Length: 211
Image (cartoon, one colour):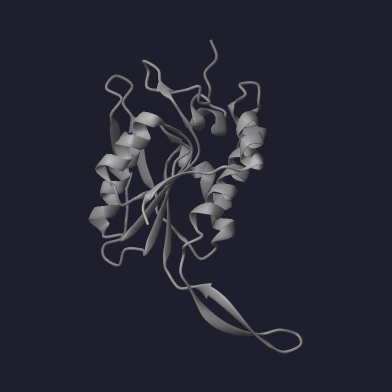
């Protein structure tokens, strides 16, 4: 199943409002990213496969389930790191593989500086974690890298996306899935999402340079 899923939920709407607010301090911003990533991951993992398993309760045997696929979390450094822990709490058996990409401020193109995926044996499902889907450049680069690795199912999880970025990913990787809390209409001349929330990495790690 492919497609774009803009998750509608009152908790997401409320947390996202606080996330956008420029007066929200970094400590609260990180908590909001954590909550939103958890809610987004819950929706994005509804189609994961599981297998039956029997467990011994204090009283008797019970039938249950466990995941039957290898799941990989692929945070795009550095902002994607803010989404790893909440998703890992939901899927503690997931593997975490990092991709380092930054945007050239002149060309707005992604520049890869780190990639260390293991040779062979790709995961069954990869969740790319990146709070912002702006131009789509980093997402497309990451999707291409995972395609080369041989991952059959890839999902992109972003807190906010732009219409331009979503359309680019849909066009270049039509079989991927995009899960996003909200899609904003525009990019400004610096390729920042509008209204957006500013630079997610700076706000997560409290590295905003004040004049």
